[in-house]
Image (cartoon, rainbow, N blue to C red):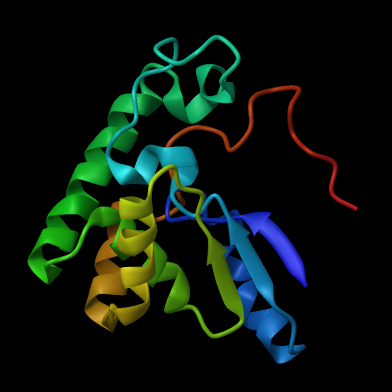
Amino acid sequence: MTKTRMSMGSQAGSRWPASWALRSRGFVAYSPLGRGFITGTAKPAGEYDATDMRNSDPRWAPGNFEKNVEAVNRLSDLAVTKGITVSQLALAWLLARGEHVVPIPGTRSPRRIDENTGAADVTVTGAELAAIDEILPHGGFGARYAEGHVPTWI
């Protein structure tokens, strides 16, 4: 079993699932909604509690934040054409990568649990996958981790 942060905005792990499937291993995608960014409710760095890591996350920094908001807006437009939320689109995008991928979104309300589980009923077409790749070809704008906070992978 492998676990890594993976979402439309953090596609570093997206090259791994196929190879892990060949080995019959699972792939746990944590933070699949980009630490809340892909929900469409993100605020700029500095507007969170002082202890919140998003204040120092490069994707929330000025310049990157605005580009990421624009990408989420484009993803939201795609989701609306399907009659779903952008969160459901993000989770369905992960589920479309194969049975071995298990997204584990966090939530703060029963309404969000219902919304998130609804993604299991969403089919993402090849054209929609291509549109998502066009919107975020390399994941979100900005580094995945702040300088000095990059994990050491074993």
